[in-house]
Image (cartoon, rainbow, N blue to C red; front, top):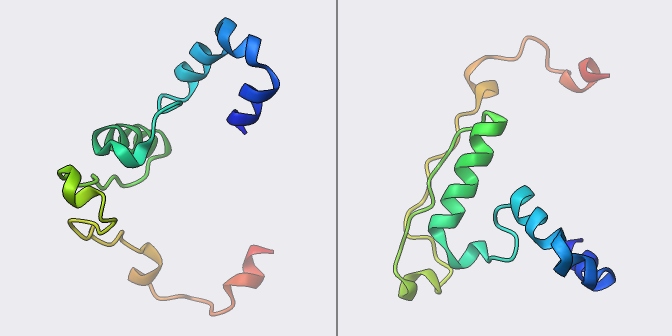
Length: 96
C-alpha cells in the first residue's frame, strides 16, 4: 500500500510525506529481515503497545542469518485456555 502512495504521488512523497511516514512507521524504507536489531526494536515497541509477550529475535552473523534457519527456537507462548478446563464445550455458540 505504501508503494502505491509512492508511485501515485511521487512529488508529495519527496515534499514531506516520506518523513511523516517514517515518524508513523519507524521501519519504513528498511528491511526487517536484514536487521535483527531493528526487528527487536519494532517488536518490543509493538508488544508493549499491544500488551503482548515479547520474544527477542536472536542476533546472528550474516552467514547464519541468510540460511533462513532460526538460530534458536523461541519458547512457546503460554496458552491460558489450556490452563483452565472448558466449562462448556460449545464455545462457538457462546460467542454469538
